[in-house]
Image 1 (spheres, rainbow, N blue to C red):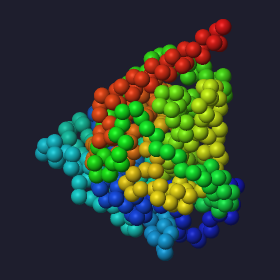
Image 2: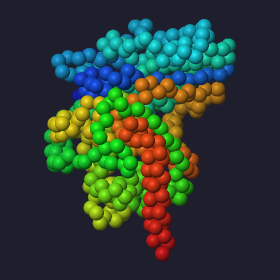
Image 3: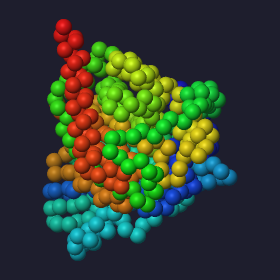
Image 4: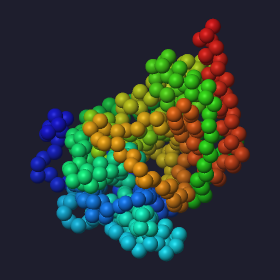
Length: 455
């Protein structure tokens, strides 16, 4: 057994207490209005198109291997008093066999109903929370549809799922056994580790954050946005994709090395400094998602590890950009170092009235994704097979909780800005104007820094 787990789990233990991250997806009273309105809340749909030969029996065998390897895919959840617990079910109970539909869909609507499992509702206590359906659309074209509850699956898990299925399928096709790195952790182990961490550090972290948030920060205002409160039922998701100038990427790489901080912290600093200089906002609160896979071995496990965290940076009117970067780096360090006071408790205890049903306490999310990095275990075969492609997801309710999310995506040698925003709070022209203004500001800011270095 991994030494980290010593004494945490009894051999006869059947139920495992969840962490506040999973409790969010299980407790319907948290964010109740939003969950009632968003019918797809907590559901992850993945659809793959497979062209060429496809062996149903080999795929069934591969899926059996997958659910035996990852206990999280066999999880059910049970409430005892006010606490939720996870139970790992047997892989032999028949719940996890994929469904095979050999008749081609009648039309587009029928195809959509099949791939989205229309009419299905998750049963959290009895399962399954992991469903698989194979649809034979043509003799040489199949579609594999997954419906997975978010409480057992996150974005990082997508690559693990694809890799493990591909490795298993190709191994069985050649008459051999799948070769994958052994799992150091199962999802129940992670739950036990995080809950122990919370018990040890809860009061210390709570004291720190109560001092940090003795006064609630103001709402971040993007130029041109409507300032009135928008009810969740009026928030409508819109998208905008932009390529940022190559000079910005060069500067971000340079500053990351110069200050010893991440690319995301440089971009976060540029966003904060833009708000300070262009709008006069010094106190900036953003939300972001973190992987949550903090223990060695978690990176190969399917489960719900990712969570939302808040980063607050307070600047002074005369701060230089270098000072801004240092403050942003400190804010990010504090966020990573003090995670034992969960966001849910933070909002409920420290900021009563700050959490609004269907509306996040913060209104702006920032994300960074390095698209150049593909997670591939050293001991596994390549898993990007020919003839397999992930199809785009359906938009569902087209509902968004926040006002805007800015996702910086690094692809090869270019930096993209993918903006998701509330179409009620912003018009498309306002968003395009903001992106242009920010891009111009960042470009000039970085150019002046590089010029100073050359001198």
